[in-house]
Image 1 (tube, rainbow, N blue to C red):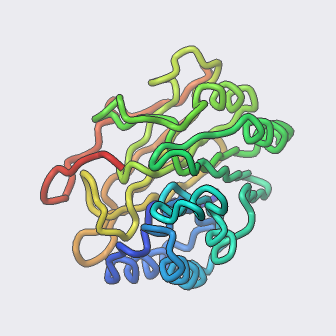
Image 2 (image 1 turned 120 degrees about the horizontal axis):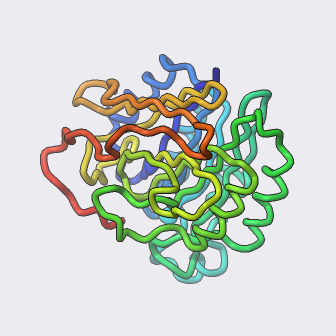
Length: 286
């Protein structure tokens, strides 16, 4: 069995210090095999924010896969946004724009979906689709295959009209053909999970989609700070959403998923999240 921790949308510049420190302690206690961070490390891609993000990530003493998000591209510095959008990300975080991890049980590929031409939306290029195909298709199907992006492929159940990553259907067609198993993303600051067939019914194979909330920032939407623990054993997945309760991270809900012989995943009867512990419903716009 492999244990992944999935963090997203930390947003240094808007981080809650007590939550960030408690998160480190909780990660150490969970002891994952791999930590996946699906973008938005900073709030405005400033040097100081990147330095804080770098120093924080160095304190996570586990293997990591990291991809940037739209907030990791400068917003107000127009020249840097269009000419050198991820220079600071490459300098302070990693120069690898397609990070990859593989062992005998899992293979994980990260893809950058952040773009200069849009403030919040993301996109996958044709070259990146080809990269996913070349990297993931040759991997044997007994290895559990995972793709990590910042922007989602599946909308939250509460709002089916929120924009998804550009070229989502083309990517999912290739993902299904290569027998990928799991997609991880963030961006909406909401924890939810589901199968790709709920939005793309004609795909030959369903892919499990797991979204993470905001791990440690004050930019909460409809739930408190949260992250995902994901246990993978063959074709079975256990998702544990660990949520901040004001003092520590605790297990908020657990879901079990299993791939079936009909080319799909067995899911809970409802994809609606449990009642949020947040004080009020907030805007979902990111």
